[in-house]
Image (cartoon, rainbow, N blue to C red; front, top):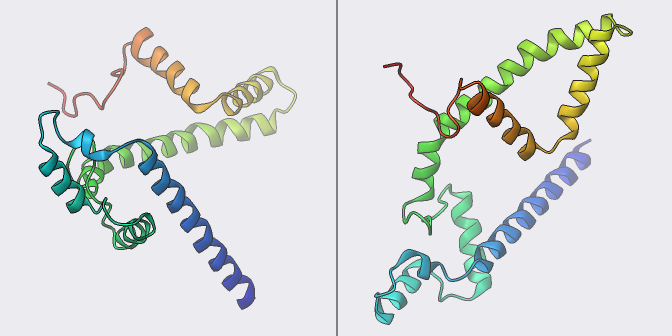
Length: 172
């Protein structure tokens, strides 16, 4: 049993390092982050100073070790797009993410459980077959298409929800 747990832990570390390597390589693939962070009129000296401050002059292997080490400490660096700490950006967006995921989980439980029990009890009924067909379609569609269709329904057609963002938190 202990050998199994140790093997699984070693496998999970290997998977996390592989994912970190792919993420690191993808970040390097998108181009020079200094060009995204500064304007066109920035001097070469200022660009070189920023590259040095970001650690982009180090060898790639050393950059990866720094990337993993900072991630283990919870320091995800500076966003190249917003020029702000990534931890701050995550902290700002975490409440909306938690609100969305908890609301989705509560809706799934509140609707899915009773409808699933009904479909199981009335296996040959028309309503049960309709529920099974709808759930099959819902599982089969890609999530990005499901999201677009739900935005179309609840925002455009019905006007119940905003098409993007959270909308007003407090009614006016």
